[in-house]
Image (tube, rainbow, N blue to C red):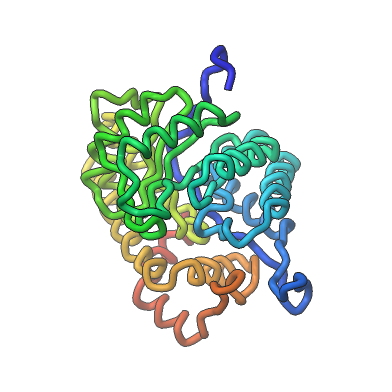
Length: 336
């Protein structure tokens, strides 16, 4: 990246880690009997989110099954969504793209350069975790510095211990990472709220140049009220307006705007319905997200993803889940 060009900082708000859409497998199987990527539906869903007030997208993250797509498929998807959003009147709409490699620097940089050419503004780079605890915090910093030095787009650190042998980036490590001018934020996909708050408030970090996002909407209020930039939340793929509303009120509260009792009560109510609805995602994962998108927007299929993430929820399971988790957010979404 040119030393004369300041890296672009991602905006605060709600990003959605969108699922990757596929054609019905019976209609368009690959040579290995896998469903083909459906870019047209991907664009339609992206426009739906943009029109609903979502800040930006994460394409090809964990929910987006990046590891199940070929290099060409990943490029075509990002390029297609960028072009579709531009044509729909959303030029320069914020797009992060997930870099989910096993940790080799050359491979990681191939993904990053492809995404930059395809139109993504940021690379969300998964913490290398193949060797688990053998990866020291010092060497994680070295890894990300090398990637960021050579990346044509700004980099965010993606810490998801559940898929990286429980490698956890420590709060003090983010101080070193944030000092690099081309490392502009992080996504923490774990439940340690203290880590989110520490990194969001650490006086050694320039918070105008380094954004902290949680991967969990159930943490939105608690972390944004203490300086975090927002969330990258899968449930917002099918209930976007409620999460956007909660974000707006939480950010208003953090910025010191006067919050009366009525607004405070609304923040609490919204956080409750969001947290309760997130239990649906915890319970049913990516298949549940795709099911929610299909049933509430009509987009996609009920076949799940590529192997081994195939499947659907029966009507009985869906209705039970609605009763347990989704009633409050459905009512709220309908009023927004």
